[in-house]
Image (cartoon, rainbow, N blue to C red; front, side, top):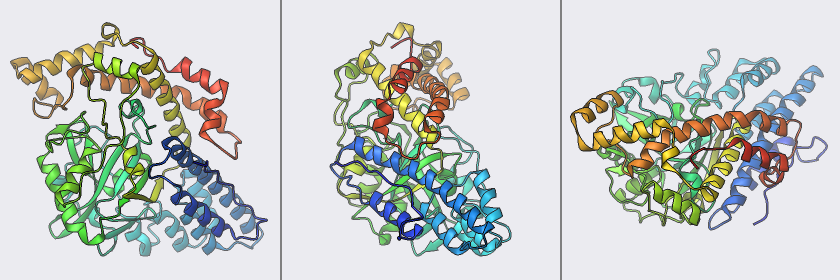
Length: 477
């Protein structure tokens, strides 16, 4: 598979800037995914994200010069920024505000960011709800759907029949969101399978109904099972760094009601998370098997699991944690490798250095699992404490019931999987999160002034390779 190598727009090119941006966007959407090379597809994703960030800076810089020279076409600028579909940070929004003197034009830019400008109410529906909720990635919150459905603002979107226009997307129920969520270290699980992981999380878009209103939501797994998160909360820059939307060819807008009803039923039925990705039990679901549950309830055939855990060193170390389900393994990358799915858009929250730092830590973590030998005696204290507590909760002992009251888990809501593995996930996520933050300054220095980017070149850099090995270390592996 050929590499995807976008080129920054050239003002000297006879093709107008907007046409250049659109051509690159279409080339990325058309980049072969089904049955393709997962590493090349990941490389294309990162190359396009880097290009997008560079092009945004170029657009703003040129617009500032054009505004000073009184030759700016503000409508065209707004269209070009919308075509990039990338989040503007605070500094970039201020620059756009100084360039665009018309509140309605600035309101259009902000609406595509999921933000409302008070002086441009004509764009508020496209901007979506003007509020956030204290929901954290993979952590329990005080906001189940039964509670947030009472806030009518979460039904305020631009609807076109059963399609929702939001953040530059046209979403329909049943769409799969493949997301890089903002939880450093979240790739613990998906980094160990092959082909190469694409992102650590998958979720399903649905339109939930209550009180005569429609509530666009992202249905996802989290530490205690299954939940619905308001669409605008899931896609905001706090919650997710980057996400792509994949659509099954056999799901049409007219299936919206049955897809959403199936998602609603799945939330009501699910008890907990499942580390066994191919387990058909709908009571315990993984982020990928959730789609199986929803799709099969509307009559679609099962989605094939294309991934596996194949490396002998990884298998041996997972066996020490009691995990033996090596193949098939249903990973988020399996959606984009499936010819039934196509990429229809992205949400880029402009956090490219952090995305890269997470990729480097994932590389280092996999190396450790391939080459090292897991020693449970040397695992962090929190692993042993967690394991002890899980055993008591499983047995429903008096102490276990007390722990359940404190932790919010019980013997039914505990994830399905080997207890030693469950006990180590949170401590490892914390360790890898620290590694991500330690590598971030190095990544930022690497990217500084770099107009072209390829993941292959970065991983081939001896300084980067050495930094991965020096930074990503676990004393028990």
